[in-house]
Image 1 (cartoon, rainbow, N blue to C red):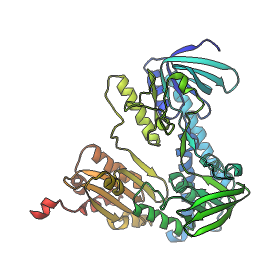
Image 2: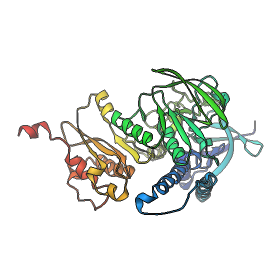
Image 3: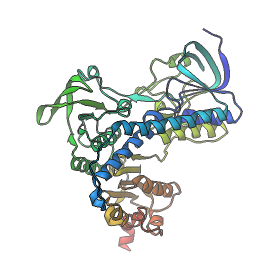
Image 4: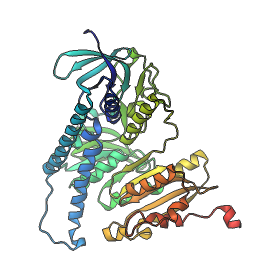
Length: 470
């Protein structure tokens, strides 16, 4: 083994948390190196968040063009060029990667491309991508190795070589009949996009509803949306066996309450969850312990079981969102400078980019009931709350808010409708500021915007019991 090169800071993985940490500490004057095996900037700008939203927007445009007469526009025959969709996405990705390279250069971070494996505490052996090897060590080490798509051990599934989101986002052809395994966020987003780009789509989920982490009314609304768009959805269904080859012809043997059936298609997309990238990288040699689920064991300050080693993002068991990973890095950075930040009780927002969007922050009804939290609830259709959906011809969806039963505090908010993510941000700020729901109810919002729909929603909050008695 080569003699170890010494750094002040060593980051394994250049995902969101890793790059933010590296750029920040390097600008503070610390000699910093980032080791990454493939994706500069991590999965988000390369094969996940941003590329998927790029393709989803192309699918949205295709949907709008297909509705052209609804908007008073006449056009001739149209066709969808999947190679063109891919080229647009690829151009965006290449530009974003260059932005990352520029930031590494400006910060003075050394980017080491290769497979990093721990060989001792705070020490990595790197098999360089272009050949050769290096050994690097540092006073402080940050692990940000992420996760990868899970592929179940269903008989025949691995042999069929199914797509994950990575391969699906690189397709330059249109699947004739795409079979999506999984009713979570990845399956929902890419399933709808594929349907709008011209594929027949069947979505299979073992759960009794789509988006199983949400309330039943949300799952029902998405189910109705998908059925209206011609997507065949099979719930409470287990895949027993797969035959054939994805990209050619596949046959899936299914089991549900009605018995057995067979579904045939051309392609399979597996979207049933994520697995931490924590095996085979020598964590045990660095004194870094794992949890039962394979995440790196951390405390609420994201410190691992090894001194001066932190873990961030998906691999640390943080919620699997880019914005959470960035917050992880900020928590560690502030604590290194004498702060006292914690991951406990963070208010985590998220948005699912089906069309219309689904966004939520805070508790939903299912979680409130599980935790024994008493609440009041208000719900309103988006087209009854504001006129903006009418101007857009996007009237599908509803909003819901949970308010503390004994105060005017906002416990949670959900929107399924146009611009739902932006609506959520407004409510999230009110929650973080500790503002009562009445602050939004009584606010004067611009007209006609989606945000003014919040007034109608919060005007529907039931009064407190003491107010009714008075």
